[in-house]
Amino acid sequence: MNLEIIHVGLLGTNCYITWDEEKNCVVVDCGGDAQKVAQFIQEKGLTPTHLLLTHGHGDHMGGAADLKDLYPQMKIVLDSKDLEMIGDGQKSMSDAVAPYARSFTPDVLVGDGDQLTCGTMEFTVLETPGHTPGSVTYLKNNELYCGDTLFQGSMGRTDLYGGNDEQMTASLARLGSLQGYYKVFPGHGSATNLEDEKLANPFLKQAIARRSR
Image (cartoon, one colour):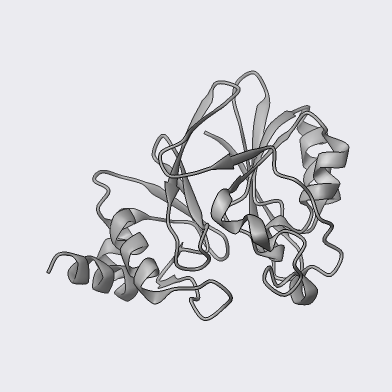
């Protein structure tokens, strides 16, 4: 697995860059540091095919327009349910966490079950709302890029614009229903794995228990 984690923006959001043997790369959540992301891409000689946004908050997509300027061929991907957050500094929290953010137009609007081919890499879109209406998890092999849905030992907030407790419970339960070994790459904090979270994460355990009743 070729993977680099870069901490970006005012909140130190996790930006993930993964690439194949042909040096096609995918950026997951560029945050607000397009130049920092571009520096790594250039150092490795990579070609970005897609920018996958897990949701519409400014600390995850604040630099999307700037990165698109640098790589016009790169396709910006966002769930359609978070489209209204682009350009709205309050709904996206960009006014507070990414005041430099510029509006942009996604190239691809996705929904649940959509498949994305990025070079030789394949991603599946799992809609996991709760933190925002359009929060998604991108599944690549045994890797879950889950934004602000599931964290090590915790879960994403539901008290921001568009947040929903019931949707979050359902989303956590959905992730918890996955069988097998999965690496979990959240939007903030340390990477973990689904097996450990099923055993130790009280929010995930509670969600699984509630959905099984």
